[in-house]
Image 1 (cartoon, rainbow, N blue to C red):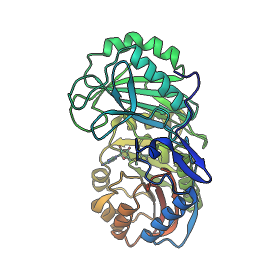
Image 2: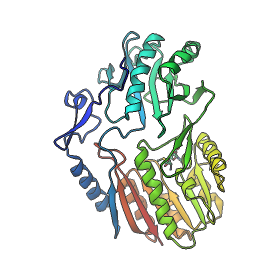
Image 3: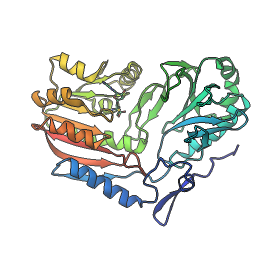
Image 4: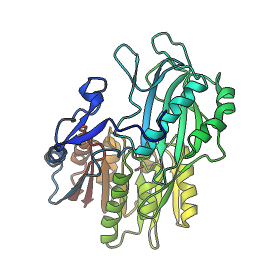
Length: 387
Ligand SMILES: C[S@@+](CC[C@H](N)C(=O)[O-])C[C@H]1O[C@@H](n2cnc3c(N)ncnc32)[C@H](O)[C@@H]1O
């Protein structure tokens, strides 16, 4: 175990991103490694422009080439004496990637120490092929302040007492840990986490203090963008657009997660409502609104069901759906409604384009690509639509 973070696997050599795991065919997740970052960005912008017909494209937000991920999702493999944190190969054997250079330095250092603690505590890695063992995944999130939330995904609660008894040793080794949980995922299928979460620490949420001045609360079972710098840019962009619009007094943030957009847009003269399917995320957003002293309501519901049943119509709607997009029912409601403006933030330009085709009365005014996921073909795109 190193005293400092292991050297990152990823670096930029002569302008070209290179990773020794990629070169050795151990991990091929970053499919654009070998493509200069400038070229990656140009290709993403061209892809977005081909799908979204906006008269104005603001300069692309790039963020860092390395160390930009605030979350590590590591499959646990190997043996109890030598656990691996990374991915499983085609034969379902563990591949160790704890030096993955996408992760921040704080995550890399903590993963190294957590691997040592797993070994010392004899937490047996789950073996997918034989269906034996307990520890399936290590999910680790770092806040902008460098504090950490660790979630250990286990097949059962068989090791709960052992984890609890070893918690002081873990916290001594990784002092930045603020939230530690066990997630129970008993099923033998390729899902990352189960329904049951056992929080082992006094703190249940990780404060995400953003450079925008807003501190969000992030709980274990809630979504947060994996690239904090780009998440801040998304909120800044939404606020810049909304502040420039006259007469936006009511805003709905659909698919609001822990309230990122809603809580940046809340303020004097603007009523904000967030809708999100995860009750934990809604509870966190509600608590943050109270921390900030702003008026914002949050509802745990399916976004489309809520909107179709509501009867109200806000001045502006923000939508930030999962990759599938908002779908025909919500797009149809937006098209037929009197909503004046929509801010659509999408991680999938193809589903965005499908949704936009269903709301021709709302036309793109400005758009922007934000490279949330460097070295992959994925990116975020935001569009301001006006009726
Ligand atoms: C891309 S995330 C956006 C979260 C948030 N806007 C942010 O920036 O952190 C999509 C969110 O939609 C939520 N979600 C998924 N399906 C939903 C649905 N049918 N209705 C409401 N929310 C849903 C997810 O739980 C997740 O928090």
